[in-house]
Image (cartoon, rainbow over all chains, first blue to last red; front, side, top):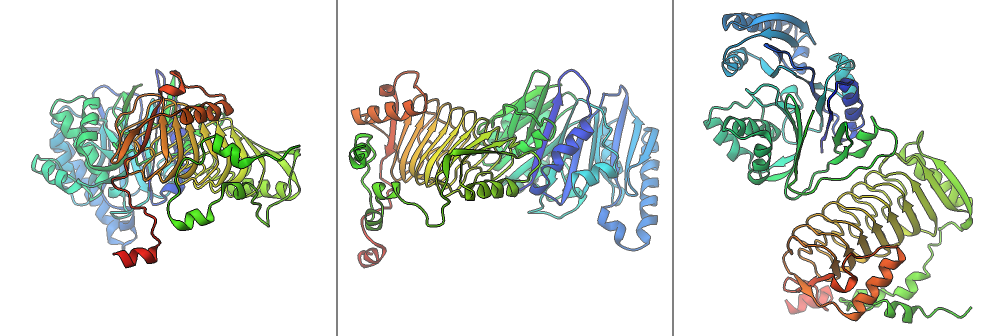
Length: 311
Length: 281
């Protein structure tokens, strides 16, 4: 089933970490397997936030050796970053297997991403000037507490609660998906894509990488591919509604934009609330009510609709 | 007071213009008898006795249990405050009751109703009044998709816009949409009436077997086997009275609404019982 949510404050920063945690926690019944956050803070000039992991959460329960392995893998990532000229400004251990680095880098981002992900077990969750992508097993309160997201300040965010239906319960199959190798683009999705394999093979032939067998990852890669071809975000989204087959509602975010698209059957829910300075959207109104408890006017976007808001 | 001639009234409103098909339905269905049907376990309520429930600290099950408790004590008018878009509120009420929600409901609100009059001052989520059998549900704001799915009777009214697949599998009753409705509205409709005062999305009435859809605005396109019918005086009369009951008007007048019916080229119903079909086939 899965639950998706997004919010954007227009023209100001706010407590998006706690707001999105509350929204996703109220959608827990739609997907208790994993929870993910893509949070957008104030953009940093010339510096990137790199969120990556070197093991799955379940790997950490498989013997003592893994604890040494994650250290070795992290050290190898550090070495490769240095080799490519990326300077580590700050590093934090989000968990024993997932990390947050602030790096200074002016080289080819795809090359950096490919080289880091070549390390065994390594997966880049996100790279961005503003984006910080966190996902792990458990409900929103658990993941938010684990990664200390409750105090995160920013302009907009998207998130996902996952009920695993077609792929494993692990971090690599959790949402959001980063639109590798584009900075600051992330996607969450509710639905199923029926032309997943056809498009995946096409995109892989074009040089894109897939980290999971989850159909939702295709949307992020598809958007990245279209933007690489010159489309702007909104044009890429409109094209996705025509080309991707299945039932889906997805939410995408960039450094300064939040967007949603709904398939032509409108078979997956989305409720919207929009005011002059705030937009919230979610699979269910209860999620919006978790940040706006008073009566508000909401509505459903229609079939085939694409909507975009600027922060 | 003179006894109301319900047969005459229902004919006057155009409620008997559809030919019922299938012998089982013709034998069992009786609009007049269904008006007087009371479930043996239904609570005796007094409409003049009113009570309030604050739903804010309660979960959805507790709210529904509280409604039932008040009904069992004879309260006939119940107001639910702060429903907070919680799911499945006001479901399975099988007797007369005036039920008011001051706020919005989540998904599957007011499903499986048989008799109550419900008003909702806010919005409703997906699948409101699913499988309603009788009564009234009136929503002041918008509604989500699958509004009135498979309803069999009663009036379901949304004064705002609704999502997609409105009245999917509708088997009777009346659905009224004050604004716009999304794609696949009236999909596999089998009986009853749907009235849309605004625009209708694509594939309107797709694979409808029977029933009638009236649209006041633009229709994106018609679904398979849905065709335009001719508006009659009876249609206009019925629409004027029905919309008037809820204070609704069509911008261009009811006589200019578009009437959609089944072309019956895909029609699978016939007048044969299953056992007779076997003989034919």
